[in-house]
Length: 163
Picture: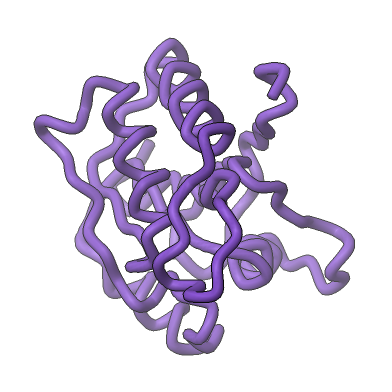
């Protein structure tokens, strides 16, 4: 992989409990299991993240922590909460944030629908909404040389783990 290439791992937060305060909704027990199983899968696949970013919402932060813990990478890597991964962030603002990220070869980005799939579709050049959507706890890897375009390298949903 050349110096400019990056693998962006877009992860939709795992299943969360219902609640009236959307920003404070925690993961459900099922969501915790989804995140832990995904982390174990990523570790077995030999994937190591150089950087990790998460929406500041509780369910996204919990998903990131559980995935990184299950990968045994939590001691060396913590997910940094950023507003760029909130649904309220516009596509141009997200694009600007993404190209300004420090150099890394593998970056974990934990966020929400509907914008997370929109970010992936934009990188892949897909116009139709139905062309790419995330289920809760799903992860997609987009390989990119410029952080503006890319190709899909991986898509894993919790169904792979029987969840």
